[in-house]
Image (cartoon, rainbow, N blue to C red; front, side):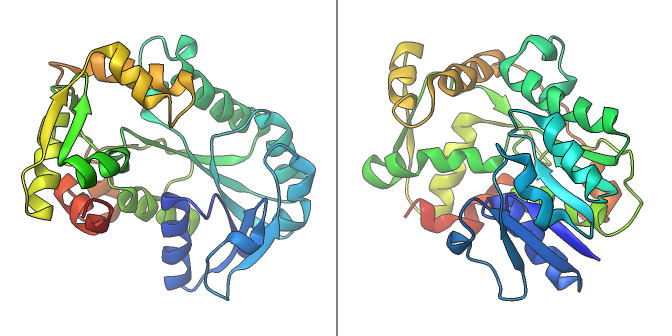
Length: 278
């Protein structure tokens, strides 16, 4: 029986594929353009588009478990297609934002909740992985670190507990290869609280040169971010930073409970991705 990984070109999905192959699983992956996937030869690839649920028919036929990310316009249609194909268990890359007060009215929380609920209502078994902020969000700073040894930020004292994408993939692999996490909704965080300023300093330490913070206004930050991400995302990012100033986000022990290992630090993430910043 194969495991289908949707989003195998992403950082988490690609790491999930690696762990499944290492464990001896048969793996399938989908993409709108499978020729662009850079995966080991033993991975079966299929053309499929999340906006066209029927296109997942061939890829999901005979598959028992699916790793899915939550960027779906019509989650009900896709979940119905997976169910018709005989899929038994969906492991969803969701977000801890679904647990926050007002999640239904929040841009980020509502889009993840919509997918979670579609899966719950389908009757399929599920595991909802709910990571907090990704350490990989710091990759957005790579251009300014390289060019100016500086990072422009409106709220450098926003506090996060950034999670390494490899930790998410480790838990996903456990969910996809057994029944231990059926019905589970683990919240995943990094092992430490860090301000954005401290994350910038950590990157500087890893690359061996000082990296400073340039404080911006919200308007300046929005103008910069909206060059690279949709405006709704720019507003969400800045709003999240604003609300995180002076907070003390919870540190989850779910990764250690599930895997028996210590969660990877932000410094480890920076070391693993050091070439982004040099």
